[in-house]
Image 1 (cartoon, rainbow, N blue to C red):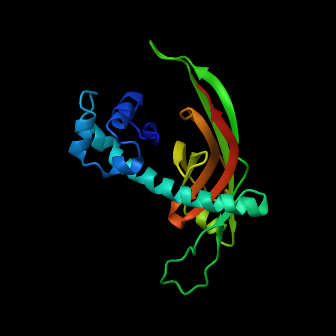
Image 2 (tube, rainbow, N blue to C red):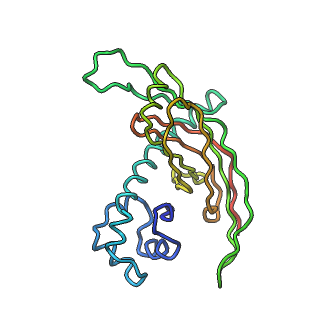
Image 3 (cartoon, rainbow, N blue to C red):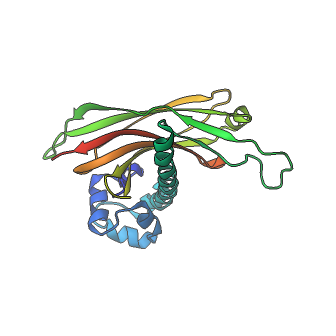
Length: 228
């Protein structure tokens, strides 16, 4: 199940309502009509104006698209890691628009090892148990003939922490963050925190996407076992 709490305005109670109604993936949420979504969260004190203002449906579509890109890149990452025994570097297509007559150059997005550590549990509210959290950090660098040109345009980048369910092709987004590239800066490090997924065994992965240039990088993290 996708983590709807990554969408501004959706908390655990609303997420639970959606899951109970059978809406468990970003793509499903993105496909809902506004009146249908309002009906599903009826009674939670959420107005249609708020849903529109916080753009739940649009944000769900963005996360569904990025998750699909990350899943595809993850498959390639796993194969390349098995062959090369190291983390993955993926290349982007040409920076120039199709009408350009200049020979294309590659843009490279290189990821460092992703680090994961448990952070102090948060004290829950009345009737709620303490919640353990995990902190993840992903470092990445941009290189290539036009790296300086790319960062000068200050495009957005998106960082996702994914959990691949053991012995299956299922993938869940655990955390997401985004930022903007800065002129003259080619190395970055992003940190996110997330609640562990449901009981099970997982392979943790980190992805970085520069969507304006179709650049995707993947780094494989440790395995995670969540017990009751």
